[in-house]
Image (cartoon, rainbow, N blue to C red; front, side, top):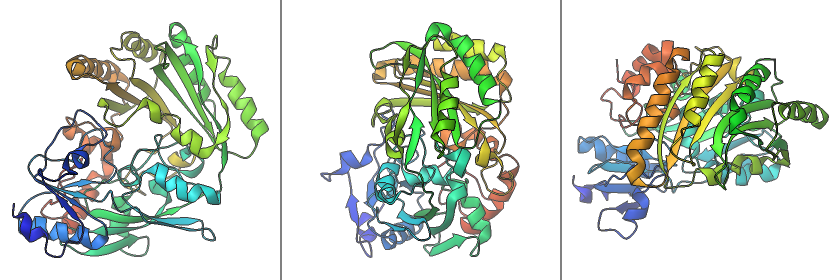
Amino acid sequence: MNIESLKSGFRGEILTQESAGYEAARRIWNGMIDRRPAAIARCFQPDDVLAAIRFAADQAIYPAVRAGGHNVAGTAMVDDGLVIDVSPMKRITVDIESQTATAQTGLTWGEFDKETYPHGLVTTGGLVSATGIAGLTLGGGVGWLMGRCGLVCDNTLAYDIATADGQLIRASADERPDLFWALKGGGGNFGIATSIVYRLYPITTVVSGMVLYPLAQGREVLRRYRDFVSSGLPDELIVYAAAICTPDGTPCVAIIPAYCGDDLVKAAVWIDALKQFGSVLADLTARMPYVAMQQMLDAGAPYGIRSYWKSTFLESLPDGAVDVFMDFAEKCPSPRTFLILEHAHGAAVRVPSESTAFPTRREGLDLVILSLWENAAQDTENIVWTRNLYDAMRPWSAGSVYVNALSEDDGARVREAFGTNFDRLRKIKSQYDPQNRFRRNQNIPPG
């Protein structure tokens, strides 16, 4: 790789293994990923992205693309090759009148919220504020507000995309609608997003937190949770369940509500019902600023922790599935792990499956096994436990998966992530990236 030729027309920062900032720049959220690129092209403006793409094409290499660096599969880094890093690109403008924000893709959700929330405006933005906006959005984007507001991708109005041929183009409902459709959940397969326009909502105060139950009561709690979320919740209320450990190491089952409506009396009725599932260990629910809810899980998933995930949408959660879930929760090897059931309903599931690249538009539960631990010596134990739990839950799988939850070894499941939209995505990939230049992702090959 001739790094000197990249410097021509590139105004950003080029880091090599001899550079002072190289070690920090190659570190991403998942501490298991330890890759050493030959060069990291840190882009400060869209023209830098275009220059790096043209360089990669001239050198016949396939770059990795880094934004937030929060993807569990570690696709933001590559050994020996080139990383195009947009994380320094953090400009954002908020239009209060139109309730929109135009955001460069180096932002995290915490940084995004810092600019929109003072205006009383937010949008669906994941579960952890350190997550980058780009990867979450391009993969579809679940979050606390999705019942009321839809997925992140449902609230995107336009994308500025640096394409494989080194051009900067815009995709919206009126411009390149085929590409616009593909970017709503199709991942980073079609180019490098440099900025995204988001629809915002006037939400400031929410009711959230956790209701904690002893792990010994987990089977009964989860059965009641299953029945509760199936009873017809208002769009404003999302409720997750998880097997976790408290900071002092106490294993428990957590019921995690997020109510984003204006009727606080109504909220109290729904939240109180969640406290009747068993003997409450601790009630941590409260009214809070939206940004506090967005940050409440941050400490549990710190940057640099080792992580391995498995996930699948569930067709159902019968008692047998609850028993399997709890059997594994009781033998979880790491107190840092989150074993989560995420319920989707409301605006997120009223969109027809063919209307966006993100295809899973049915009410139900998503099983996310988010294994976290600190010591490399425990890698095998935690990975094997995660795989075994996933295999044991497969009889209840709906045969689909959220693309942002795929681990490094899940490449064979990409078609599963896109379902009946996969073939259309391949055709659009052929139009915008026929040589599969952007392949270091959950890849959709041209076809």
